[in-house]
Length: 401
Ligand SMILES: Cc1ncc(COP(=O)(O)O)c(C=O)c1O
Image (tube, rainbow, N blue to C red):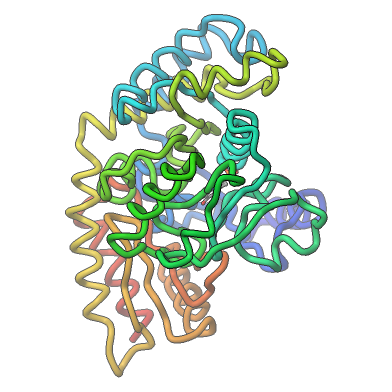
């Protein structure tokens, strides 16, 4: 490490707020495709896609070109929803053309947590109801509202009082869904829990949830911040179950590497924010034109190159190979997930931490999920090449050995 790099590392620890006592501290020189390159000349294969963001890899040329073209036109010009901004309109039109017909109007945000904040407020205002239901093991973001519906107490406790009237039900238990009643404005659910440990619900859970919400007039919010944009082998995870929520929230992979999120519902529902009072949910930067231009370029790549299908195919190969590591000689117990949203379950958190450390030493980036630290997240870019896939799997195999 050069003296300049050493001093930057010290500045990083001193001047940049730390979110954990053990930051990875890689100093990134540049990133391209599935790789990150450090200042000291090392190359890392990114098997977590910057936590579900780099679905089409880092710095995809189409995204870079779209960003440059937009920068030459305009940056921020006015708070959300006033001026006609081509980049926003084009992305909204494309997005709604790819979502079910009932999801036909988009409100853009900067992030996933803001998308969920908007969706929860929308549901309360539209229904006039006060209660919310979420699931144990969920993660919906770290602002107050999203934190209130995040299903792990240690992450809520320090910030209480949070939103009142939130009930948590066990994920994947159909028997408890009758606790959703006419007082409940919305149920928020990840179709596949990400931070909960890449948990895919049983076949009947989400359809039973949809049916119960419809029966009692409760709005169903699907948080697809992590599952969206091809990650699970479909453009949106809802397609696996053929279920249409009342609101879907999006983020992460949406912006092609730029900050962007959205909540999408039908026009009647979405019009709630423009009356009683008007401007009842506004944002300055939501749907920033540069992010929207990048988002449209990224979405076009996903659709035109059929990356959802590629995620299904490559994801199946990866899961099969990882499953072959289950056995007496390794601490791998289970492999789960859909498409390229994969959870590698180790026997305990120490084994998981060891695997992450060893693969890191071999130039492969993995990480564990927030709520379940024995589950390793395997979420490479969807356009991972065969060579890159084999390189990553070899590093995992050697690290387990
Ligand atoms: C399912 C889900 N919802 C919401 C969020 C929050 O998104 P953001 O970090 O963009 O606020 C995340 C982030 O990991 C997530 O996985």
